[in-house]
Image (cartoon, rainbow, N blue to C red; front, side):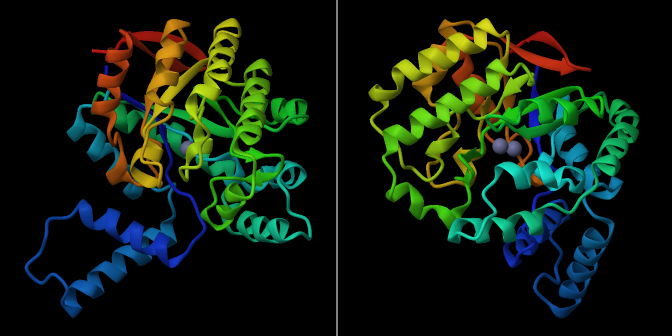
Length: 332
Ligand SMILES: [Zn+2]
Ligand SMILES: [Zn+2]
């Protein structure tokens, strides 16, 4: 069954790059017109963009682009999981664990958080639930999840946050190592100044903490730290891979094959790496398929290839979620 369980409707910062990328997504759903690159065309594009910015991501017009694409690709289930840090209701959770102090990193991350944390969780949640019936008419199940950040010591607080709404599933992510949001290109230099093996060990320790917390239905992009291509010799990481796989199994927690880094970041490799994937399969860790799309034209990106990789690794089933119950479906 073809599913994409990790899809975002929007993410700031609202830069010129964001504007360009959004315009590109809108254009990719329209037939090329003969007046391409004329002033008339530019007027139309400006109107589409103005409408997109005004109505925001939680609008039927924007979500319909994802639905159109899902239909074209034959997807049976699509899970929307905007980042918890986008929602004003939980800004203080992030302010406690992300470094937003007076250091250089802190100031940069403060600006980032203020730019991206601007949406309403209430609005997101009710919008997706309302739209499920529309998708159902196309034979596609629209699932509602959330991608929440794990912080060591923040477990009780996050538990309270996650209980406030009902979800089809909750994804646990580690995007921050001791307060540093390592996938932010503006902070890439820190990789060059850090002992990579120690950094990876720390990241895996946090991933293990996230699994042990039992707060999450699946753990996202297990080796996300490779994002900019800074990685130790993989043979040094095999024992960490084994431990993560064992911990996932022991805590009956799933993970994903996530193609986001393959098409959006310098490392150009999906998570987990082929070696890591094989180890997960050997431990019989349940897995689902994810594109980590942030725009409708990226939905299910590289998922055919990911499904092949799962088969090669020995998987015959993937998992899906409904109201926090995990289900198994054939990979085929
Ligand atoms: Zn993520
Ligand atoms: Zn994501």
